[in-house]
Image (cartoon, rainbow, N blue to C red; front, side, top):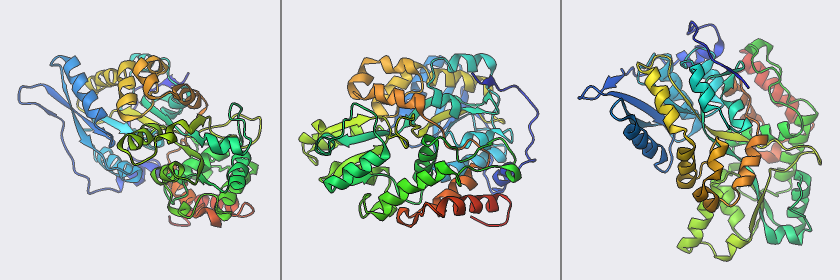
Length: 439
């Protein structure tokens, strides 16, 4: 298990990543505050959801019995804007950064310059029990737990049973990308993937490279000028072959260059749907559409699920890791209270509630025993297994440069060339890190 982060002196400079964060000189400085009755108020910066985090804030305020109260503050909807706002506030020493919902790729970038308060050893020990391996890895930097896993997301393979049967695929056994590509082609159907120039492309490329036995960043803790990338490798070439084939052969559908998680789900639900890699939200969203009458009731019985496709037959797949970790700002006035509140938020029963109400899978395996969760998500065991296999996106302080570089060089999918794209992409990202090119 990873070590627990210890208290240490914080340096606001020293790395390009830290310097990048501090560029936001226009950040608004807020101060931590207490309610009129003197009760400390903790601010929890939340990502958009269906009200689940606000409900947990209310529950844990009640559980605190007057020791503190938790108020939520909504972050922007897209990941890039969330990162920017958090970075600005932390770099400016904002004292209201008591609790933050953090996308795992943000964690190294915020931990490296000391923007996160250390996780107390006893808190880390209690909050990392029974945590799925992927989520634990995503909350770790330099072999230390620097944030607390809250919920963990992953993509699984959704499929239309009728299409798989017609194509002769045995879905009780692991399947490969090559197999589902050929199955979709033989049936004249579309594959559901996310081809837009967005974070989803980095998610896809990373899962393909990791599943092929590689890594986009081979030495993630290295400084920028020493970073080694693994795109121009056999694993990168195999990833490019898959992306290119789906794009060039039109297997992703006409909307592939702008396709996101939502639009690929809509395509999968239609007559041209076959197979799709996507998150668990697909299940409640599809059921809701059936209940309101916008989709046929027969659709539900035609949907199956399995682990993310293998790149190489017989080799373990490495599904994407998403989700949210909870961090505490280094300048928070109430770090001890914030970690007490976080311990409440991540209790298994609260994670199970969040799974059922908002569709976001728990990081704690105990929550998968909740009866309501099992009834709402009959594929819960597949999700849990996927999370044990899942690999995070590159854990590096230079994640923004790496991710944006991939998005710019691997889109649109039809333009990806296995012979040139991995090398071109790698050289471009390294040039950006050396300051020779701009994103």
